[in-house]
Image 1 (tube, protein in one colour):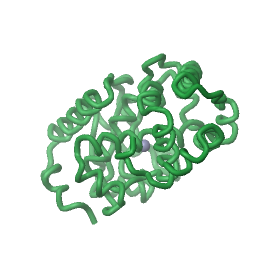
Image 2 (cartoon, helix red, strand yellow):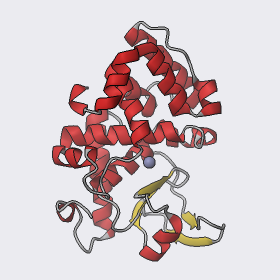
Image 3 (tube, rainbow, N blue to C red):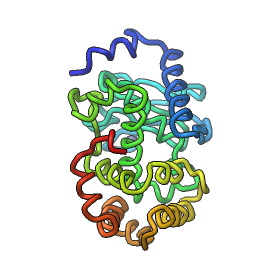
Image 4 (cartoon, rainbow, N blue to C red):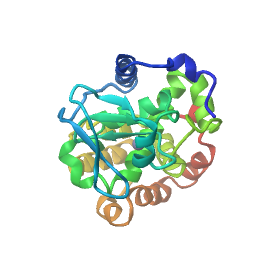
Length: 257
Ligand SMILES: [Zn+2]
């Protein structure tokens, strides 16, 4: 089931140009809220492959940056819980029909401007995925909280499957971190405001945390790439910020930020 407001966001049927304008307005909102929305990636065609084998299924033409897949194809490409996906190699967003709404477009557009999707960091893509998804979904929530409060309320309560909070475990860690440090420190990392090169950006991120909190926050990147970045990061946050971090994780109340 989806929110009754969905029909005011997406007309039925919708055209490719409407979809493109939803993407553009999401990028504008991201730029307005977080200060940067440079679209990265080349503009090559995108070939989707099945989950189970490598057979090529579809080619999305060069000038399309966002599209909704046909139902039969979506069933083969997406996991059942997936609403959309961003391909950094070709700078394309694909959406799961019936399963996407405003929050999906914002989430995927955030991926498209993030350091974690930058082609120069492709070798870290898998190893940083849980951190990247947590940060992406957290920033989606922060944007909804500021700009679309009704959507935020449904998102945080997971009232509807289509637009509810995803990656809850990872979002809680990122949220509590931002409550203990400052969301801008995360945003600077996420958007590559210091540098686009991942390991260097993480070093700057750690330095920023130390400066903001006067703590001895450890650089956990090496360990994180071995055991899982989001959990190693969460452990270090808990070690440094202790009760404040644990309490914030429990509340997940964005008005506390
Ligand atoms: Zn994502």
